[in-house]
Image (cartoon, rainbow, N blue to C red; front, side, top):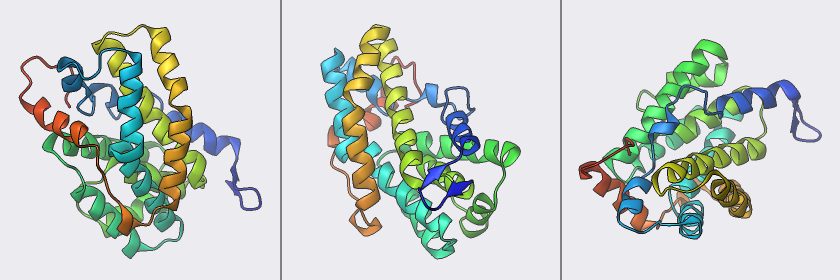
Length: 234
C-alpha cells in the first residue's frame, strides 16, 4: 500500500485515513473541547483572532504539539515492529496527560478508535500494540499505529491527524463563542502553516525531548472539571 520510492500512499490507503479522521468515525471527538469551553467562558477566546492564537499555542507548545511527537514516534515503532519502543511511547503518552479531563479525552478517543479499527480494518500493528501494552492508549498513539499498520506514510498521516484536531477545536468554538461558519473556515486556513510546522517538529523531535508549556490550556482543562454549565465533556 506504500510506494517506498516516493513515500506516497495509494488511493485506498488515503481513503482509509480520510474515513478514520472524519467526524463520522465513532470516536466521539465532537464531545470534547480540550479545555476550550472554560477558556471561552473566562473571556480568553472571544473572536476568531483569539481562537487562532489559542490553537497556534497548542500546536507549538501544547497538547497538539506533544501529540505530534507521540504520533511520529509511535508510527516509527509500529513500522519497524519495535515492540519495546512502541510500549515506551504508549506508556509515556499515558503519563503525559496533565489533567483528568485530558486523560478522558485522549483515552476515550484512543479506545474507541482501536475498537472501530479492530472491527473494520484490523492489522498486525494494532494486534502487536495490544499484546505489548495493556494500559490505556492515547488517541495519537492509536491512530499512528493503525496508519503504520496499513502502510500510510508518517508525514501525511500526521498532517491529517493534526488538521482533524484543529478542525474539531474550531468546530467547538463556532458553537461556543459563537463564531460564524465562515470565520471558522478562516481560522482553519490561518492555522495551516502552524499545523505544518507542528508536523515538522513532531517528526524531528526525539521521545526524550517531549515537552509542553501551554499552561493556560492545561489549567483550562482542570478548571473545566468544575465548570457549572458545560456542553462538552472536556
